Length: 564
Image (cartoon, rainbow, N blue to C red; front, side):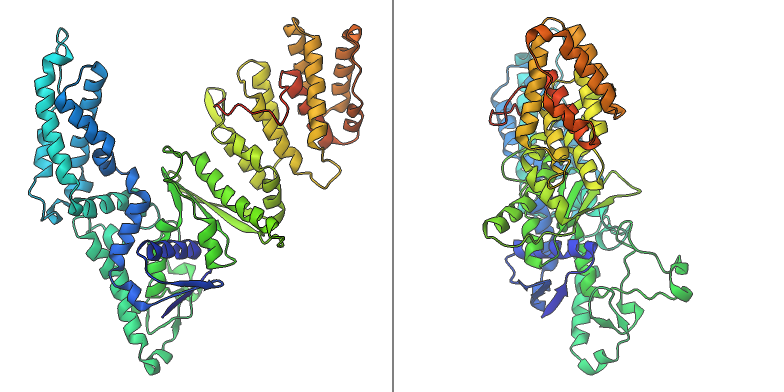
């Protein structure tokens, strides 16, 4: 039996990836022993097949291959054979021709054609012969229908051969080796500079699996094994010599090449070694992250292997077809919040404490990984604000010509323990300048900010915030038809909030209410609380300003969920 135990965060990502490979192939493993997973050595048989099958199952739908062979594309090509009538259809047809020609003649595809021995079709030659159908100015779509039909038949023939199981077996994994795997590890096995035209299954097996199988065979001789002096940095396995061990230089942005930079080790002697089994674990890192367009997320809930698998069980295939980065993070955090909710229902102690959230960004070459710590306190705050966070997913504000993701901005501040006053100021400034209409979103940001103070003197209840907001709305009603005057009041109040000056804020409030004394509006008493508590002053001030600029909805009303 092979036994592996959770360790540092990257190793745990690999463990999760390994679990996904085994589960995808219906191979048995025992995850019920706390932080340990055990499985039979026989699970390594055909592991390379299971590895790429799991990879294709997770991320194959994002490849150019699936963009060609999906049902919509095939149905459209068949329609083109029968006949099209609109200019847009001809444009779409020519775009498909361009894409198929470009993809099928790219190196990712050409390098695997020699392995498609069961397919009697020359993809490269056929793709080079694909030609767009152009019509002259005076011609109609009907005038070029014959050319469209002929070319569509060629495309359909190509698509039928692309659907062959051998084409899928080689083409999709090779594409994913560049778009997914290479972001996490490179320079060895199938991603060695000399292996681009070789069988990726054989390359993976020779480098990872064969070494592990050989090691396990030698391990059976207990007398010889007991004499091994090199210990794996991740597990208790021992190795005879450095030639039997691996390092982590092939994992992107991790590890040191001892052959080139020995100064990183004491007395220039390399003392960190990885056994062949753990080498396989690290190769599974690409399968441990949940990825969307080069952005990945991993929740390091390392209390047990079962918890690790459960909390990272984020389905990208269910629900939305087009999943954004915000959606990915939102779904991941809701896994945590669901866990917290289940614990609360079962009257268990809150078990979430100091969980690492690891983000991956393929486009960041210098720092692809970022790490955040979700403490028990922050997890509880997120749970209390879960509806507000969910509302902000997919909400944007345009500031200085650039779009600002409210969800990401709030999440960054929440993680780093930063305040929200600057964000509230910027958003309210856009509202007053009539450049942003998302008042509901701003109120959600204020709720999240306020919930940080739960259990402390700064905290204000939802009912208190509602009354403050409604008071601002009533004052707005009193200034109906005097928008310029109302804007001037809003600017002064906003500037007082920016510089954290309660006196200046209250002077403006007194003037605003005095000007409308005939309306019988009394100055609300809640402003007294703002004089001696800066945090409460900010919360009260922005709640009032939100109402003053027109947000009067009550919490039980259905919120507008369209993009701002």
